Image (cartoon, rainbow, N blue to C red; front, side):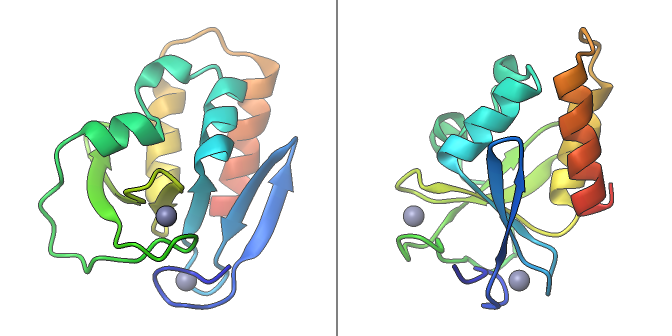
Amino acid sequence: MRCPACKNLMIVVEHEQIELDYCVNCSGVWFDAGELALLLETMQLEGTGISVDSVLTSPEAKSSEKKRRCPICGHKMKKATVGHEPEVLIDACPRGDGLWFDSGEVGQLITQLSDKPSEESDSQGRVITFLGEVFRV
Ligand SMILES: [Zn+2]
Ligand SMILES: [Zn+2]
């Protein structure tokens, strides 16, 4: 699969059934819809409202960033924000294939999510550690 930002070939990073497509050139990351759901489930963060569906039903974010094309279906992706303080600007496939995070954006989101008071579980800690390693949070 090609990176929607820089068109380099992406590599697959796998950890406990979760596969992410990662661009070593620009450090962006693609989450398939199913992978994102699995990740949030593993981290016990299903209730955070971050899902492909909720991103697609939220209003389009105003951004000067160029529109990117979905690496799966080639449609122009929608700009949307997730999280708070700061909001993280991401790209979402209008057909629900998945979400694109630019370099550092996953880290910002994970940092916000992992700050939330929640029953810390081993699996959550492991996924955060994994993401931290991959994305140098
Ligand atoms: Zn790239
Ligand atoms: Zn798509």
